[in-house]
Picture 1 (cartoon, rainbow, N blue to C red):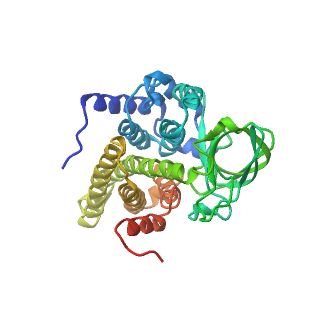
Picture 2 (tube, rainbow, N blue to C red; picture 1 turned 180 degrees about the vertical axis):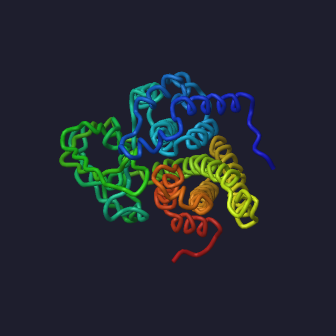
Picture 3 (cartoon, rainbow, N blue to C red; picture 1 turned 90 degrees about the vertical axis):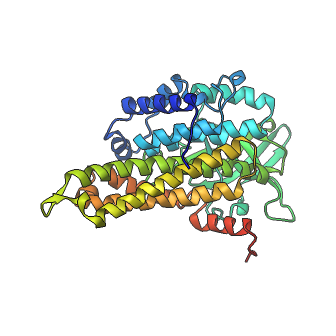
Length: 383
């Protein structure tokens, strides 16, 4: 089975690849990683080219298309710079696709044109010091006060909060009989009084950066509530399903880049009188990575089409996220092993892949959580 795309989708892939070649040249990802800053100027040019409007209907200033086209964009960007693909996905997926699924018409008109034009950057914030894999344990509180809600508490690992305009924020508005009841989502202006953002140094994805965010009597208009009060858990599942899918094409694209670099080294590096790629021990490792990427691309394509058709994809999205993020770790490890000392130097992109890959099996639901979800979906009893 091969992945078949339409002529329009192939043209989109080619256009994004051309953009990436111009704007994300070799070495640029390492520069951004070393500076610890995302290339927001490139992000704006990406928006000006119309790519951020993909997946957003034309009536809201978008370019049309659906999540299938978004995955094509993410894979191609990740081939050039994985962190840039991670920067790009947040606004179209968490905010764009979320608002299209559960936002009001007024909210769509207010935010979607800004997302499509690149004027508004969104991030997503769920984790807290005591709530990560256990998402229902969130404590950050939103209390109704007239026409507003007042938010107090803290969030952890809020990636991109220091440069985003808005955050899709998971809060607790009440205490239900079950732990996942009483959760609500809000759009929060990150320039609001009472918000303090503190960076958290990390091993990888340093271009985007992540943060601890403190909310001290932050007042948010009631009109910024997404969906009905207390139904946030259902909305979170929509966001997480799409976030998990997004991890797949990003991992596929970055793995393809790691493979390309390792292949070039294997073809040109000579030891014992021949290119190292001629040795079966090396060739088989790279063949395994190529097979993984092929499978990962098939998984991504299948799940994206299912979500575009409106299917429930808890199992499929979890499988794609689990396989593709672990695949990226294997690809980066293999690339590092094949390149040896050259890959281990900070002048190599392989060390960047090696560090960035580690986040994939932790964020958006760890590999262990994905396996728990899959086990539940296939009918195994819960602990």
